[in-house]
Image 1: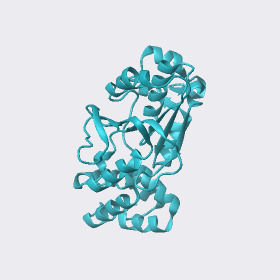
Image 2: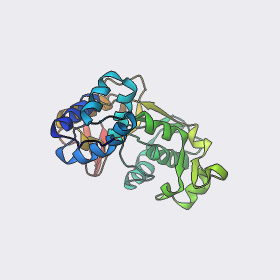
Image 3: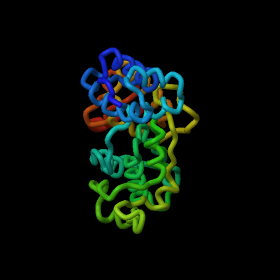
Image 4: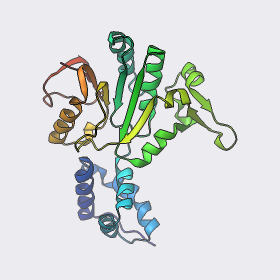
Length: 266
């Protein structure tokens, strides 16, 4: 069946849909991306137009989640923007009280590479001291990937040989060409579906929060609300990390700059 192109009106419907659910602002340049990611669902359901698919979303909660997954998934990889992990290891962790649990939240974790990068850094630096990493995302599809800890060997860029040897197991047989993060690390991380534009669930307090490369998709007022919400979960003296292309200038009170794209809660 031939699928029609995405009209401006249909694109406006999907922009409103994803903004209402996730607070994400899709600019005009994202029209081709939206069409490309949703076209496979039209074919799957045998639908002739994006308008038909949009109407399906109002009647099918499972399909709504699939659409959210497709429209919110972003690229990530191990040790992305490595300076942040150096600052965590060299400046924040040495100040942490010995024996006290160190908790980190990766608030837009996608398929989990950031979570396991944090786990490797904490395991290296803290040894037997207690630590925990929470990874959250809106997409259930990427959270399933993250929870499995299973990745293609092509995703090892950014991982040192030492980290690969100590924290990753190479697949054999049916798992050839893939690797899995060790159970030692996976035992100290957990994942949860959390919508940052809604009231947060009871997840406790954190010593560091990573909110990287997600706010670029939010409008200013949504950014302010999300940052204020996350700060209620950051301990005094805790650090908030955002992407290198992002800034919290004018978005929240009670923060002081530690380094570019890194802030400390007073």
